[in-house]
Image (tube, rainbow, N blue to C red; front, side, top):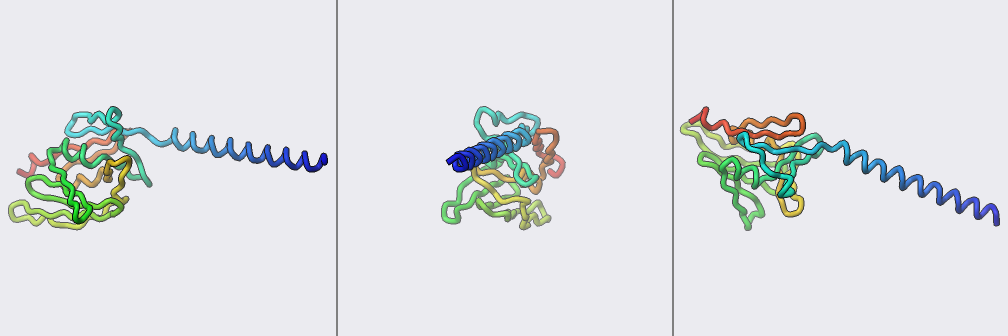
Length: 162
């Protein structure tokens, strides 16, 4: 009987220690994930109020697609038949689908063909009904994208090509 009680006690100790270790690992991982602010054309987007926070996945920072695109002056629309999202400005458009790393840009700037297929570093993702894309998604739209010290800064560079 004493051996059985000793064995049961040992199992309980190992289980509790394992749970404590797993809990500490989760806290450590959460603490090491940096919080990002999003700045578009020098204006901070109030992501903390809306819950549309940029986040990091496999070393790539993702930003909320609609909030970022509309802040840059782009139109965003849903293509129900293809279950895809179109983002467009006056010279080009791009279509992306959730779960895909492919972005198909089409457009023309005078005699320069802007049509290209771009492979994103990570797939387009959805969290709580919000679509997120890598910050680098906005570079082919002639934007400067800088991710530094917890801030994602996206600035339109269109004035230099008009």
